[in-house]
Image (tube, rainbow, N blue to C red):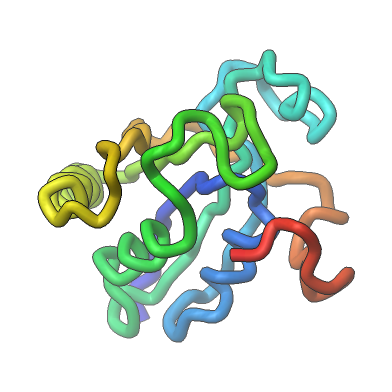
Length: 158
């Protein structure tokens, strides 16, 4: 098994985490915060909008069973990547669409996928998904992990 890491932000992290965990080849998916300037932020701080972090999900995957391109397909299928700082009822930079890449191969794949989506005409507006080299990932509080398994599906259906 060859494990790789990927991180994505697509609005509320509960649904994003649950969707990735359904995929064969995904070893783990963890809810957390990424892309900001505050160390070890709390949910309350991130929701305040001043940390710069997005609600993100770090995905550990077996690249012999699932490709990064397949993860990108699911990521872009689970949210609207053309809305800036908003997904469904959630708004603010913490709910932005973002891909945090770990190597140049991931960066290139994400850039190509965005070009392909824009060229396809699937959305009336261009993709605004932020691409950023993966900074420190901060694991969210335990009550956020596997939230739907613990509490049932809530408002952020994906």
